[in-house]
Each structure stands twice: as structure tokens, then as C-alpha cells.
Length: 133
Image (cartoon, rainbow, N blue to C red; front, top):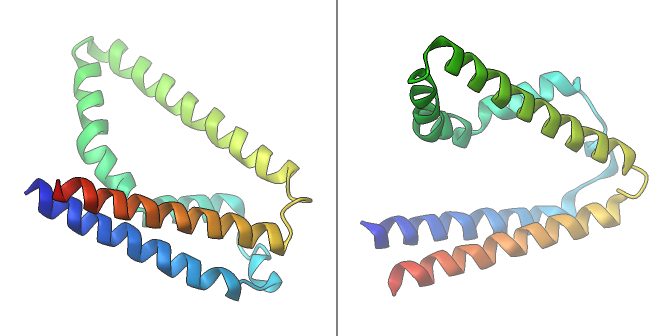
């Protein structure tokens, strides 16, 4: 089972990397214009991300259950700390992107996409290799 999951996962990573690599040269300036609010975009992106639901179905639910071992106060403390961490991380990322928008021209955007795509392909190869050992 480990081999099958590693092989399929590696293929998926490699496929996504190749697709991103092929699409990076088709990025036009018009596509980078904001068409929706940041809140709508964030909610939509999170809702469309299957890993968000996978995380909550596994790790997140275990954290919630463990927090209830300390009663309502434990659960409320967990929720407060978790949401605060999410908020401050998202605030940091949004401020960093906003403040760095003057260096994010089309050339830099393509370079970053190419680097990320290459990294996904390398991880895909590594997953397949690790699964087959």
C-alpha cells in the first residue's frame, strides 16, 4: 500500500508540476488583475482546497477531541489560539504580498512559478523513488 500511495502521489505531484511549468509562460498581465475581493478569494480558495478538509478530518479533529479532554475551557483555549495563529499568519502573508507587489512583475512571477513547478517535479520523482525502495 505504501508503494502504491507513494507512486500515485509522486505521479500527481509531477503532473501538477508539469502543468504549472507549461502554464507559466501563458500568464498575461491582465490575468493578474484582481477581479474579486481578498476575502471572497480567500474563502473560495480555502473551500476549493481538498487538503483543508483532509486536515480537519484527520489532524484537526484529533486536536479538537484532545482539547475537549480539558473541558469547555480547553476547547475554547484551543479555538482561540488556533484562530489567532491563523489570523496572524494570514495577516503576515497578505502584508508581505502587498508590500512586495512592486517587485512582482511578470518576469519575477514566471521565475517563481518555474521554481515552484520544478520543486514539485523533484518531489514527485523523490516520492516515486522512495516508494519503490
